[in-house]
Each structure stands twice: as structure tokens, then as C-alpha cells.
Image (cartoon, rainbow, N blue to C red; front, side):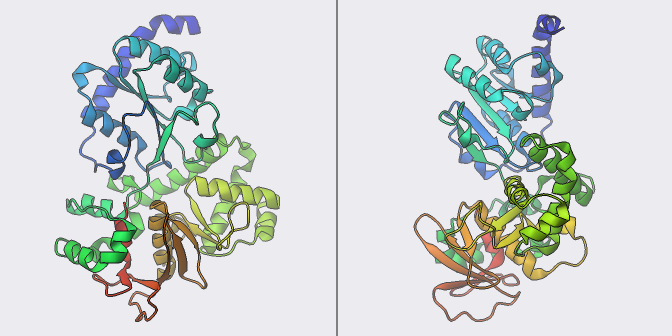
Length: 408
């Protein structure tokens, strides 16, 4: 049967090109992600890591539309969902594409192809003028893969920041700022932004539904998010981590129990009893859920996984509404937003001295942040930064919470 498939595969290549053209031409005008300008596109093997639902496919197609002429047929998008790859190897396909003038192959959902890593390695070694850009789940640990770890560059595609959300909703072109810039010049930055838009008018909308791109679709956001969460568990956790299907219900229960108590210190023994799994398994599942970007783990200074975390947060505020659709605790939303946006800035966050306090470290400095009430109290400590939600423009060491959504 597979020999027969090989004989007709020439026709299938044309079908791939037709699909590629259709997808690029019907892409619409999605917001261009900042990551597009941060990637070193000269590298020949590039992975785009991202959780389900953040727009990895759209990102690949945007790249194709921006950098390649459709008529030249030197760039091609393929998806490993296509059943023809059950009988055709990635290498064989790349070889045919390469010798017909192909320059860049975009591979979506590469994990659905068995032994994808050695195939990509072979392509990298045999086709020196071919660039491959592929998407993977955040659960996959590329740096630990001996086949490709030394030849790959990988980048994280995240959900929308508050800045990106504002640009979409208002049609603005607001730029991002580094944490150092915000701390040094937050008043001037906020004044400039507020002269153009009113960020607080959109902040709660972002908190509720602005992180995932599918809020732009004409479907029920909450139902779509719940479907996406379940797909994360079923595919990104179970399938990729090779966990038996019978454990799905236990992982779902664990995630739900965590969501009810976030941010809270997890009782590993009690979770073990309630989910009917061992303490060690609970600890491993916490790590899997973190890598799937469903939760964030906060440790005290000097501790890391596999130690028990001091606090568990949901990964982003949209997830809080998905698990607890009723009235939300404003302080939990504020802390979750802050953790999410700072975590995306590749800063290292640690538990502070008390509730609502974070220690934030970057490559050179360490800062203390207090996530306070909507109207922040006066801050007399010069070494502590206070955030306030209901504030457009800050003063001194008091910074508007929304401004931390401009880090990417």
C-alpha cells in the first residue's frame, strides 16, 4: 500500500502547494507578533514553541506571507495531520521539495510524526540550503533531545500581552518596553500611552478573554477555552508525555482542585489521596501542567522543582474564569496577571515575604513588588515597588498594574 502511495505522491505535492496558497491568501490581517522580529531567521532549524491556542499556525503563515512570494514556490507549509505522512517520511518529502527549488519548509504539529527529531537532523545535514521552521508543544523539552539540541534554535510564542490586545482592539501601534525602562520611566511612558488611548477601559476585558487569540472568532469564548484546555491535557500532556489514557481523569481532577485554591500552597498528600495517585506522581503532574502553561509554580528563594512549590497560580487570568465562572477575587486576578506578564519577560519570580509580594530577578538586578489594592496605599519604602490597578499614571515607586502588560 505504501508503495502505491509513493507513486501518487507527486500529485500530493501539488495539493500541498494549493493548500499553502489558499491558507496564505485567506489569512486575513492578524496582528503581527513581536516574536516575528526577534527570531534569527538566518538559522536553518527553528522551532516555535507554544501552548495550544496561542496562534502557532497563524504565525507560520504570517512568516510565509511576509518573506516569500507565492509565485516562486520556494516556501511551503505542511501539517503533520495529513495522513499521507503515515507512509511518507519527512526526509523524503523535504528531499523532493529541496531538489525542486524549495528553500523553506514550514512544518506544523511535528510531534504527530514518529521519530521526527532524527528526520529533521538528517534534513539539516543533507540539505545545506534548506531552512525548516516547525511548531512544537511547550511540553516538549527540545534542549534535552540529543538528535537536535545542538543544531536548533527555539523560541516561545506566548498568548497576547495586554499591549498586543490593545493594538488589536484599538488599531494602535503601541510598542513594548523592558522592565528596566518601565521602572525608570513609568510615569513618562504611561503619560504617552494614555494620551492616545485609555488602557483601563480595556483592562478587565483582557483579564477575562484577551490572552488567547480565539477571542476574535465568532464562537463562545468560554466553551472554546474549555475545549482547548481539554486538548492540552489529552494531547500535549498525555500523548507527548506518554501517559496512559486511564490517568486523564486524575490529571483533570488535579487541575480542577488546583484551580479552586489558587493561589495556594498545594497539599501534596491530600491531592494524592483525592486524585488516587502517588505523591511523586502529583509532583510530576504539577511540572507537566506548568510546562503545558496551565499553571505557574512559585517557589521561595533558593528552591526549584522538584521541591514542593510554595504557591500555585493559574497560568493566566482567562483560565481562572474558565474554571470558576462566578465572581472573581480581584486580588487573585491582579497577582495572576502580574506573574503571567513578568514570567513572559523571562524574569525569575520568587515568593516574597508575605502574600501579594514577589521577588523578581533578571540578569543583573533584583526587585520587590507588592501587588496591592485597586487604589494603592502610599509606598514609603524606596526599595519596594507597588502596583495599582485603578491608576492610569503612577508616581514614584507606585506603578500602574496595566503597564506591566507592555513587556512584550
